[in-house]
Length: 331
Image (tube, rainbow, N blue to C red; front, side, top):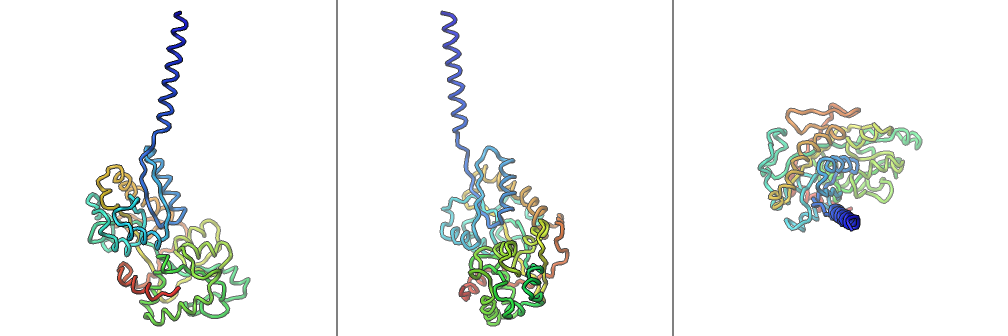
């Protein structure tokens, strides 16, 4: 009898442990949703850092293009499934500022003064510049000279060799557009892009800012309008790319991070956001995009140019300027 009783107790204990085990395994983690316009390799690094730091949460970083993310947040306002915006260009963050929380706990004093918004509703994540990038080997194979200016790219010998992203969908495409509007005036710039469109590879303007880099990698284009840090990342991975600097200078933009209004009252969300600013953002700059946003911190990346000839980017964070220019863009 004693032996039977012991066996019964042991069986009940085993069943209890099994039940507790299944309960623990089936316990749902809190979901924290982050949206970003960042490249896949930057999102992968951020996701890895978040997962290692916060195993108790189910943190989901989802990529959306600049156009898609801004449209979603404009339409949804505060009633969105998004908790944190990891990266979106400043002009759109200004447009949706009523849907963003004031970041009262963020030390904005660490950032360059010109990058700090008056509203204190978003914190700088990355300042990034762009230029024309070439695959010299492919140009030589096509027996085409290296271009020396933007105007060269409308010549018939470059037909099918150029890739540029659409300003309506991509912040990268837009800063090239704004740069030439500032340098030449609207009429000349719009005429130029009409002419350039005839020389684009594939189906025309790409929907993603990284599309031109991908076209260069795949040999689908020999010339791309792309971000410098994206090109340098590929160069460091063995790509034979070169950066060209034309007289109009290199266009640039600033992208920042924010929290949706109401979500600042969730301590879990704010814990993740604080880590994004304190650790993820600096690591992103260390690995990929070292252009300066902090007053007292500098980063260096192999093969990254030290003296970028920046363009005059008047109106780059002005949403009214952007909407006006995009209304005139027909592609």
